[in-house]
Length: 144
Image 1 (tube, rainbow, N blue to C red):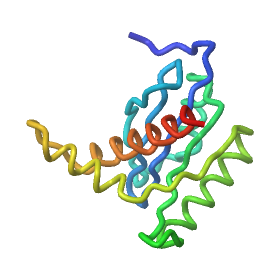
Image 2: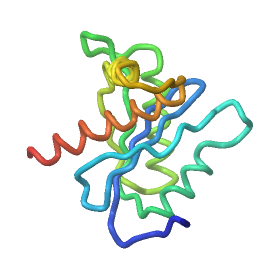
Image 3: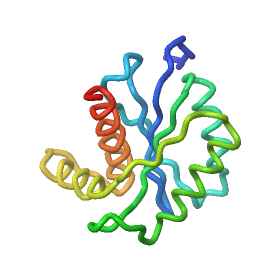
Image 4: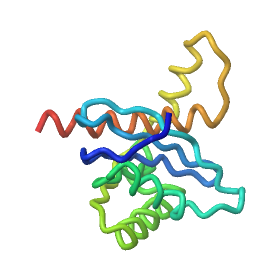
């Protein structure tokens, strides 16, 4: 089944990493998060070009970028990479970009996957981390 652009503004979440980038997207009503894919950064493909197709196809109006922080809430390795990515996305696509605290999302994703019946790999963790990141954002938005 081919994906088609609908008339509903969706939210996209990005869990950025040095090797892989997990992606998740909201449902048309903005209530639930669904995993899209994990983008492999080392394959010579440009992530922003890939992102362009997703934003266009799904009418993305807001992009959530995971911001790694220490348990004390201060920047750590990867924080600068997330901030730079957020700036490039905002400049290139003109969409709202929100940096979202991603503390513990990868650990929680791994815990959830370990509790299941099937095997998994790092790509599954990254995609589920993006889902958790987005679901946290959607839940907080609903509470406001």
